Length: 56
Image 1 (tube, rainbow, N blue to C red):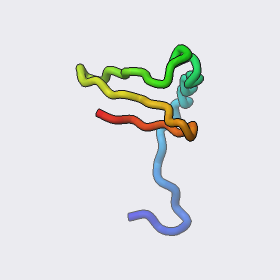
Image 2 (image 1 turned 90 degrees about the horizontal axis):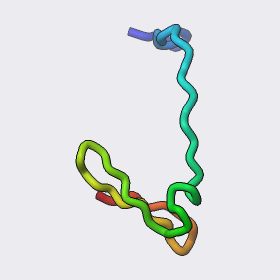
Image 3 (image 1 turned 30 degrees about the horizontal axis):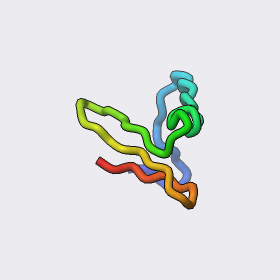
């Protein structure tokens, strides 16, 4: 059990850098992109308010 002054144990391996992709690059000038994960398609859409929606 962890006390208030004990942090959880973490791996000592250095963290890998997170890949960053600009939405404008991903969308290639459009407002929608299809992402495939484990054979399932997900749609990433850019709304008129500039927000992102991911749907299955």
